[in-house]
Image (cartoon, rainbow, N blue to C red):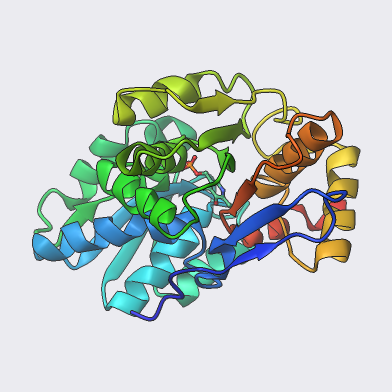
Length: 292
Ligand SMILES: *Cc1c(COP(=O)(O)O)cnc(C)c1O
């Protein structure tokens, strides 16, 4: 499968004299983008090892994970099916689900209540299907953590502060695992994009067994998951026009906003090396066209 790894590391232009580097995982692939590829890599390998050729997964109507799974499966010659939370009629103009279909994914629309029990949805429909392989929402799994840990090996070893956005915290767990494995001094700064993001620390702890070197910044959620405020939208416009790099309102914009805010308040020492992980997910912009 052709995938752009290692992804480039480049310098941002405009952090008021401070060197901020950006790890461009958004350039791995336009559709199997960013951390979603990192998460799928060993899931695909596990399915392959068990000789399963059909990935069955779960997501909301604007899920980057669904598009990534659909695209990765078509590249790998696998079938894909997704249980989509929501109503088919409401999703008729949804660009991301259109892409999923184009990549050959079968979509099963599911009401919110049944969606909650993913293993029973899987059992009901696919218990008899020897080829079906269960992939949790967002790809959350030990395989995903392993894939995300590999990002650290592609980065310089002398980073002081590494930043990432978090939804479930799986990506962050992988990064911290990588940092621990290589014995680096790097601090991992995590920006939960949901309200009440303290739970992310427990999620990370489940996988890593220690939250040493983890710094959680829970005040940059802008009202909650997929919520924005005019100042975040303005930030995206300025950032994109200045840097020539797209960021999305759901994840990466909240992380870059946090870095910029911390920077402006003198959080970083001038000599410290700061790296931001661009986790991709730019199709998230499609769900918010009316905001721009
Ligand atoms: C899914 C996603 C995340 C969140 O990853 P988790 O492992 O769930 O924390 C971050 N950034 C982007 C762009 C994503 O699509």
